[in-house]
Amino acid sequence: MSERPRRRGLPSSFRARFLLVVFLAAVAPLALLGLWLTRSVMGAGEELLRSELARSLEALSEGVQERWSYRLGDLMLLARNEPITRVLSKG
Image 1 (cartoon, one colour):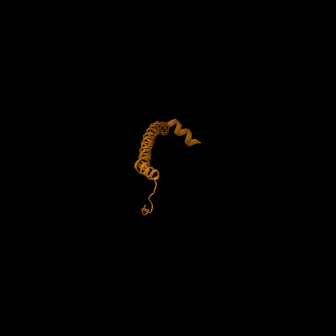
Image 2: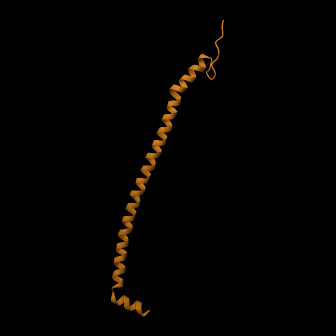
């Protein structure tokens, strides 16, 4: 019987070749798909977080602006109130 020369880097047994084919045909693509999905989900999650934070900041700033308008109105009323200005100027 003549022996065939072994190719370098390829397994010689059928079992090893079969496992290599299964790995290359199933496991490797699934791993790459998993990496791709993980990266895309991370991007979508970050974008969702940014939009929620922007919405929250907008709602918070509207509340602060509304309260400041009331405070400014109160301060202007006090500044134009003659008895208050007299009391404060005496002090």
